[in-house]
Image (cartoon, rainbow, N blue to C red; front, side, top):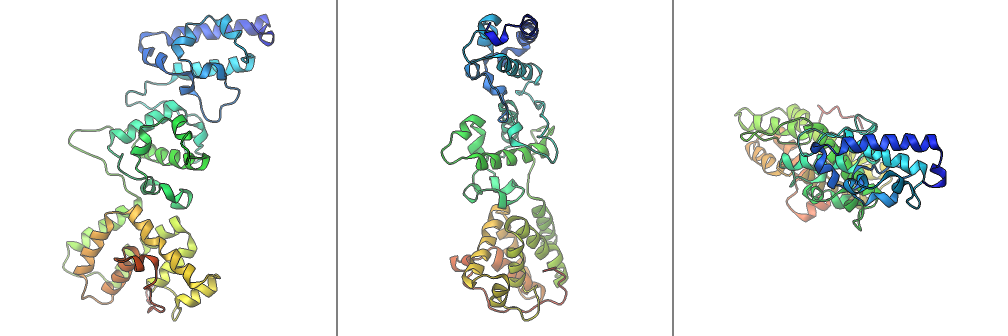
Length: 359
């Protein structure tokens, strides 16, 4: 045993704990775990890891005499303690091949989510949840809490891109630094939190959508089934306002205010030029910011364009409800690249007396 581990009391305690864990992990039901590397049970925030052991399987380590493990160069008492902690995780984690999630360390559950507290065992279970519910083709941007915290280059990246990779493999990707890895893990955590414990049935499926989309689609489908047109206030309340709220979440308050002007929901007589001056922006920058709105809507609600255009056709002759819906459609789902870039926006729009949006 190395010099720093030579205390008879310390050495005996470590040995007893190792033997206890060894007996538990050699039970027949633990057979699959013995094939996994020790690193599988580590968390990103773990310290004093026994690097000499991390690439070895549990089976190999448990077959090695404890005194030989203690003589491993670079592995002292503290690293041996971490080694035994990892064995403890392996011994106490439920079987991730089934539908029982591994225990989530402090920092994963609840509002204080810490991606560094996610082990490979937990990550594997989250990947299984995505696959089990057939969500591989859904995108990261669809489920992110806010697109402001998700790098734009992965807004449209399918979840399936990551269900094939371990956390270690994701961290080795050239374009995936700590911020991007954190964003990916946060999205998978959100999906897992929603679907945790939900079984799969052969005749039923689960559809996961952003909350604002569920509200919008419910209202649009309801209106498509009615002959009486909605009021202007209803279009604002059930369609315009949810979109503006989501724009604020994903693009910030400045873009929300500009979108409100574009929809005709701002102060009387305000022009895009005056709003640009008030915000200290050039008109080119204003149009660029508004060009992000349709990009966000296509990430969050890719099915939305066809639904909204169907409703727009039904309300084509209705004023003012149809006019407001038409402006919203032009903002969120423009037909041309020029509209998407904001170059066709009018310099003035008529305000709505019913609007109560706080600027």
